Length: 144
Image (cartoon, rainbow, N blue to C red; front, side, top):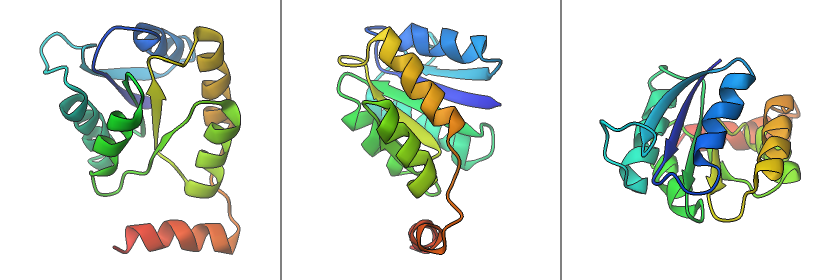
């Protein structure tokens, strides 16, 4: 799978996200501080990764900033993107299942390397729910 990854700094697990994704066999498109040719501010980097998803250059994205909040907000401004800020595996699984999230937002401050692995395991093991209520909620977002 092709996954866009954005970070506004190389703090915390920023580089580990890229390494972990590549170890899992994914192709990474790097943005922000992970790409020396790009602006590294969270709003610009996260938007670039989200646009990769919305425009079909990537199937999913992982966006990171100090708290993860700004990265999530920036990604969610892009039409067709459903970014979820996840601090644990349970939330990552639920984001994929109930929200059909296509962008994972992470905090560079609070996510440790072992926690990152757990979050990514849950994210990639998850799949969108076929429950009509869950599908209707996601469809409602797309209709706006």
